[in-house]
Image 1 (cartoon, one colour):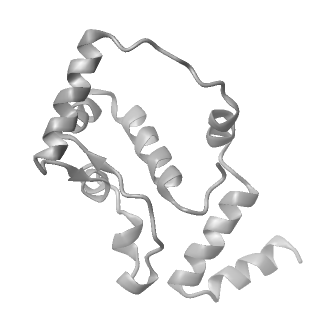
Image 2 (cartoon, rainbow, N blue to C red):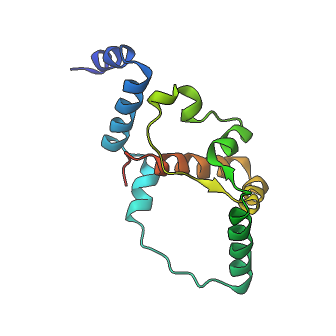
Length: 132
């Protein structure tokens, strides 16, 4: 089978089948960034008092129900979530990612390109069929 035949097969798939095929292709041909991250050693940084206080504030805001869904953050950055592209029946089960208001503010504060890379990685990492 050549690339043209593979493209023709992909063109015949429905939305749910296409998503499944795309996820399988991601496993077979993972993103170089994810491969690097999966091989990187775990860094153990000491948590400063300032960072600990920020984490406590974020946890408290989430406990109060002030979390923002990942899909809402994607739309805020002008991106369409996978859930928006498919019917409810076709949406694969994903890990829930909830942002605290503080995390949202931090994401807004960095440059757009870096923020988009973070969002992209979170989408890939939250998908049940993935390279990691």
